[in-house]
Image 1 (tube, rainbow, N blue to C red):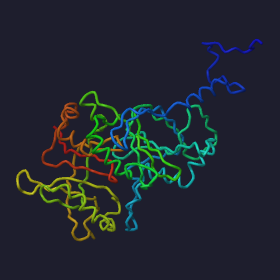
Image 2 (image 1 turned 30 degrees about the vertical axis):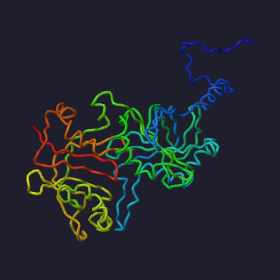
Image 3 (image 1 turned 45 degrees about the vertical axis):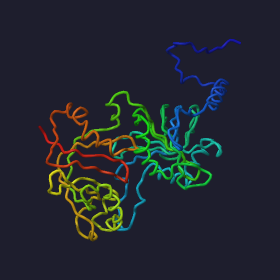
Image 4 (image 1 turned 60 degrees about the horizontal axis):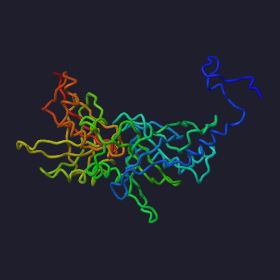
Length: 389
């Protein structure tokens, strides 16, 4: 039987989207079945008991999207301990799973409960804790979305590539293995993984996490690569000249040469600091910096939280002023294991070739100190004091 309306290659009157057959072509079903049978990832190597390097195919996620910034941390207006109020990708995903919003999305998409793969990913990462997150379900590339979906439904394709996959067992279940809870996993990416493998963060990829149907995290995936040049080792850093205001820091101060103890000492008293009205705007906005002792070459390390004033601070908490002025903010777009040592390496060892040579209008201001900032015990960045030349 002759086709009365043939589609001809190159016909300017016919567009691909105009072709809409009454029945689904069988070839699409064959292709979908073939993709379903392909492995999502292939093992490349096994650096550790719970860590594997894998090559993954592209991952399409349909879910709920939200913007996360440092202002998403929340303010302690009521003067109580709100250590766990910070919003991040894991907490956002857990909320959506526990309250049934992702399963509602799965029902609308027609995905059987047994086949649902709960996933989150970070994208549009700008450094300093600013990023977008999508939390939802992995779906096939040929799935057509219905017209009616929950508010703020978004879609993202995580590019294919190489990933470091770390198993998580946050609830220490005996039937599940993993590297403890997610903060321990972050510490592993910062320390053991970077020390034992040649991999660094791959800026061409996106980090993602997987979860079970209770919101318990199963795996963390960080895109990785072996850097081809020294500059590639640091290409996940971002640089921006900024002006900081003078800041008051409630902190602990180390003895000379005992910097490793100062963070733990401050954590012992931080809950008391957060109860003070002076700290209500600065939940978990941590700063670390050195202060001179008066002896040449000797300094003490300070670590603490920014506060609005010194009023009401508990006894035993040190008070230090940080000078404002022009600084170069060096932040990272890697988010699973953003390593505070990497911005320090650049600040003290590579700043000229990676920034100052291309910006001769600036020079290091040796009258002030480098400041490190940590937001919610993650998102580490440094501020290098600058002056105009």
